[in-house]
Image (cartoon, rainbow, N blue to C red):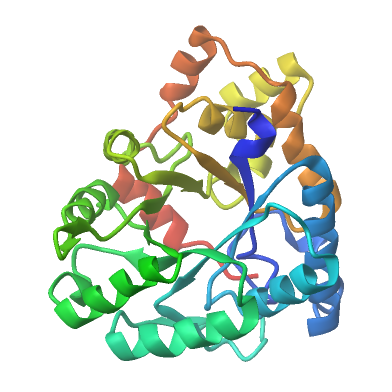
Length: 312
């Protein structure tokens, strides 16, 4: 498949005034008002669509991301766009960059029903995939039969049911979620997980998911910006060799995984997107990939480092 068609745009850092992406502060609008962030979102979506990207990923907890996206879809009426969103977290940051708490998680039937109605009101007719946000093995969803049945109903409405994962035990969550069935049918048909050069622990489980027919989406392929602005020497050297930025090398490694169906980009400006899209000119050899494989760290360390990042 054409590399550009395997890319998607994630709106985590565009739908609200603060996120944990390193290196995005200077690319976001001064003041980060609602209108300025809406304009920034539309600019990125316009540039992505013009480049050939046809997947956009949002979530209820991404502030006004669904609202911004819904407005863009209505105004532009773009053809062939796949929209995925998520439920389970609620945005509580009140549009403040220094909010004490930005989002609150709850995997319950009530939360699903309320957020699905909110999502439908903003993305009606465009939603392709609805995902459980940051599913973990501890989630009550695994024991909540009525919630599982309600999720399964989405399939009858033409919406695929998926889940995203976070944390050091992504592999265990993926494998357990793949076993969930409702009326003899597998509940989930998509999975979105963190994979990047520093955090590769879910790779085998994601390969299994792809082999079982699930659509695999990769998120945080730049490690929340760390692989773009704080890249290890190995990444910087390869970037210089290919005459691209470190971000393009990190993304090329993700696209080099044949089991990855969609690789999400978290660009917050057309300029940042353009730099990311240089990935389409990068071809990493086996020797390059072997060298980059040595950058992986234990998942517990990776997620501890991620948790220490500030919302800015």
